[in-house]
Picture 1 (tube, rainbow, N blue to C red):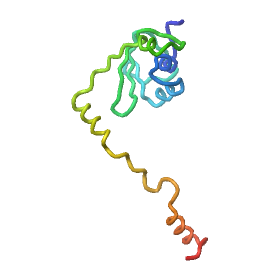
Picture 2: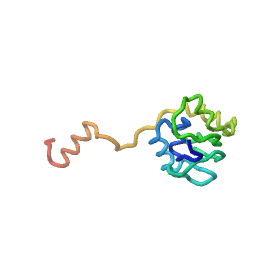
Picture 3: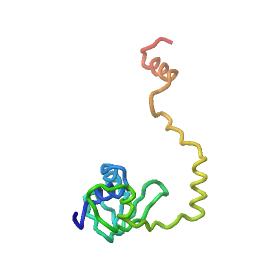
Picture 4: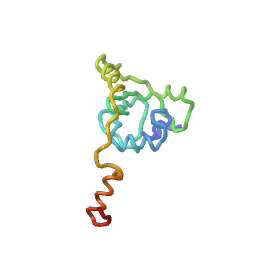
Length: 132
């Protein structure tokens, strides 16, 4: 076991991301910062590093690395690899998340996907492939 390990490997081992490739996508997408700077997947992590992760819109985690491992461990043991110092959500954030659960799902963008039967027939008529 070394005292440094790649960031994507550590995120996978610490069960922050489900897979190493998902951890790499988090890093490549600019969702992970170490000491205030965006971190790429190949960046090495060591004990004491402070990691800020944006998991979803409005959902962030602030972690301090306690221990560095490069091999998988049980999920309960993985939680001991870091200290979660994320501040608790404010009452406004809690209320907003509660309201978001009741919001209707966003409608698909108009024009996305295959046109419906009527629209396809109109296009065929316009192109001269179909008789009126």
